[in-house]
Image 1: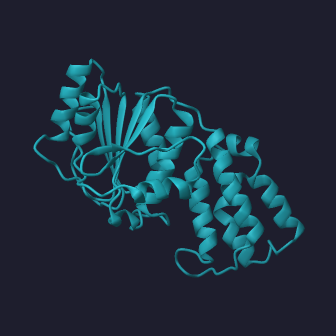
Image 2: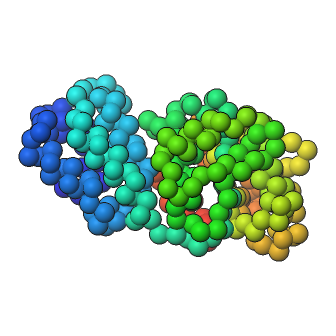
Image 3: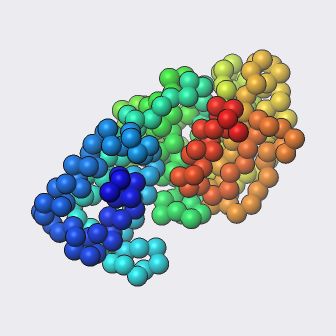
Length: 263
């Protein structure tokens, strides 16, 4: 059984008593989950693990037909696997600026996911902090403020840092305005919000164009409205802008390919 199939079926295997506490099968599964080579071979992203962890921890499937008692050893192995998965990620070599909405509404579940918006945003901040050398993470407060996410921080530590920042308006033009004002070289701007895509005096497309002109960088903008089922920030005539509604593991590939000019 491949690791991706295993991750999807942990609950079922436990519910059907294939995985029993302290059993030999549990030991084999835990060893697989902690195996960095298998994670790399299966192209497992930390978010894949996190979805599996939260689903398994819940003790029931999304439709409520299957119920199980989560095994502590498997939960521990999934937690370890989450951090190991970061080591298998390939850097893009691009300069990122991630701008994160820190409002209370980010505790809402992402469309089609067991994760909430703030957890997805925090994980993506960790991905960039751990894999991309030249990157910045900021949050929407009374103005754009730096969100100090270090490469060695755990997910709970990143979430605490986000919660400590006073909330401001999610104006999607602010990351480009801030980067231009502070002379930060950025190839890709990514905004993570729930569904708040408030536009201030400057439309995001105009702020991006001005940033490109002033800095001489063909920068791109991705806006992820993770609990939204429809919004428009991107200029449809601009190939360097992308709106993403909801957020699932498929969005990861879209972001990577868009960043690398593959789509």
